[in-house]
Length: 352
Image (tube, rainbow, N blue to C red):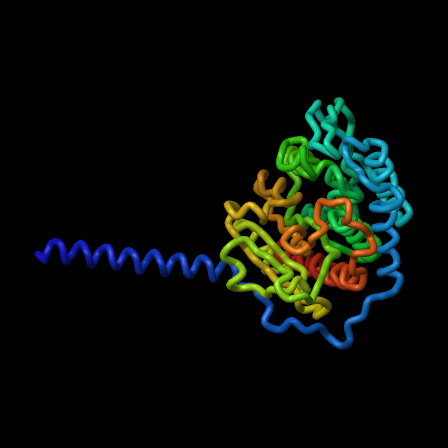
């Protein structure tokens, strides 16, 4: 071996070592939020009123109304009216972000294909004005996928949204809180400009709103202690537990600071086990809800979720029904999210 060949080998080896070191750092930095202590405080309690309210909302959306999407337009309208009514009963003034969806083929349902006409759909928005120009958006989609009543996906998210708005109604915030029930998260509108959250984020950008955080509440009610009940995109199973008994906080790399702040606040409440991951967007699963829309416009946004199809065997089926929801766990998550929103607001207020 001559000297030049030896030098090349050294350079290649050094480059390989550096590349591996960077990869190890990147992976560790991305998934540096597994919870080491997963117990909850013995003093942590959730009220029966909160649990009952959450259950009432889930049952009304997923059972009384049932399937709610653009091939069941009357049910979609009933859902929007119900959400408006709940906000108004709490004392909020609401407005609609209405838009028309173009004709588009529906997904195959029970061996039939449905032609969708042009129709008007609406996001439902309730606002709690703050003393600064900062805005915190808390959102959940109220439509269900074609072929499912959508108890976990996503009546649980809407229930959490409505109960958060109730618990925070009297609390003073520096930032304006916008509670938004989004339409059209599910296919065939998923990740298109006809997705309700995309329309809302675009409107916020056009108004130059100072959105300091967006939190997407997505599928929050399914938990199990069964071994191997939790799945992950590769290679995350190396870092996280195999039991689906925790709530997950997820973000893209640009929203890392918001994610760490949020999960830290949630864990300080010691109300429910949690896991966190800040991942690159080429891992598609991290963009499977309304936070994706806000990323498209440069806003920091995270998803809070039970991980949906990575855990729930009834996901996007006719068996996603209210009796399968763990309402105690859902109530605990809502209480924890009160701490999260308070922390985000305090942190933003200190920086102004």
